[in-house]
Image (cartoon, rainbow, N blue to C red; front, side):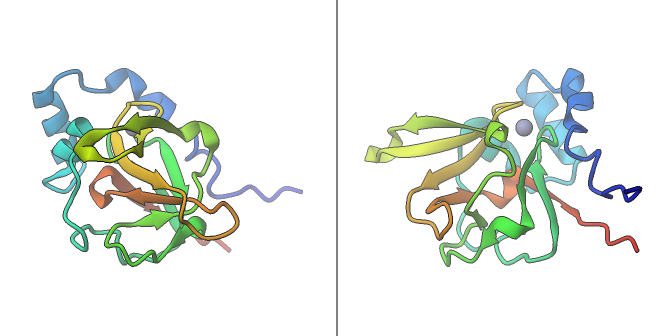
Length: 156
Ligand SMILES: [Zn+2]
């Protein structure tokens, strides 16, 4: 008793930011630029574009920490569930919380896929496929540009 997790507090931080979310494209672009987002972040998150494989900043990124929505800071994944799928995009086998991500049927490009969006701000994140590793068998195939990383603080 008495030990407080250094990570507590991050998980509900996004709720403080909700009132300030942009509501048009110019505001979103400015908002993302101010957060040091990748140049493709606006097209990815607000118009469901896909970054080119092997180009994102988190594709080969294995530090411990939390991955949040670049748009609203909603916590989406932890580094413990990240794995190397070899597909060129950061991949996770589980969301940090079932409520963090919404799934939508995506019939674009002649395929039937499951789109994933941020449950808070509806940012497009990527897709989820049923070919991931145990224990879930899922592969959340994400765009780096839709994510921001917060390193885990290792306090003694
Ligand atoms: Zn979001």
